Length: 336
Image (cartoon, rainbow, N blue to C red; front, top):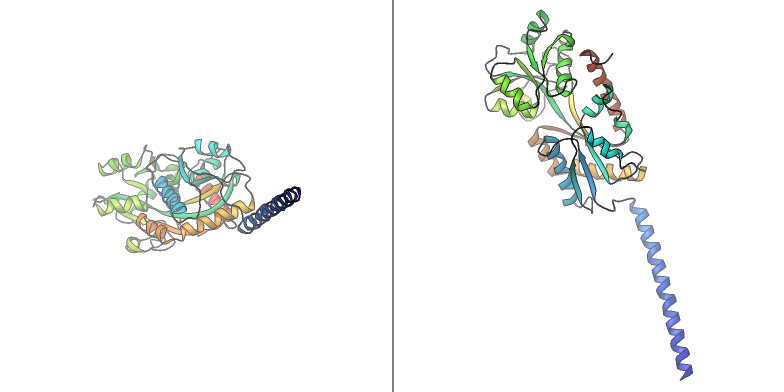
């Protein structure tokens, strides 16, 4: 009886040793696999959008969110968090070092830094990728006597105040700078232009169609939908060359003799202080999204210029964008 008891104890002890060994081996294997795969998100990821729900930026962010989850690129939930204006960067600042927070940025981040409105700049955080751009245009009401860029130049060179121009909701914003760069290329001092700001595009459109404005600075997607409705005419596109689809039938400013190339670019930032391994993960994940069939089809429908620039090249590109914006802000007299 005692011998049997000893045998059972030995068996039990041996089993415990084997179980402990298996557990230790499992931990080693898991650690090895984890190291081989690199870092991955461990909890809900927040995609911060510096605009209200329903905006074009918000729509793009929700498409990115959906593809990250549906294609199993990220295995944890991704949620969109709308934080309009500078509140968005304040929120991102609160999560320094945390790779579970992404920020889909507008060019206004750079503008506001140049103008001293905010201390936050692209290099305050971790540049992850440049995602897509929008073409910028100048438009007139369909029945306007202004038919080409040359007509605009003739008017403005005779009197910079001859034409009233809607430039978006913010002085020094994308719409304003688009106008300034075109004016500069025409040999007109942008500081002397008669520019008008509106709370939103709908108000500017109403004023233009009502004959209260002569021109409006507008993204191509907005301009195209209104031109198709027979309300607006696009005078020029601030692109290096004609694009695909409807852009193939529209002249660039360069074709008309004005050296202007300006895009409204969107880019993704991570929180400040995340690791190279975490940065590399998001670079690869976003690349898969932006090169997917679903995103490409979405970009075409929205008239975006789809492209992808990874985290190594993005800071250089943003530095060049920063200098272009600074030069344009000098042109309109907002920076010395």
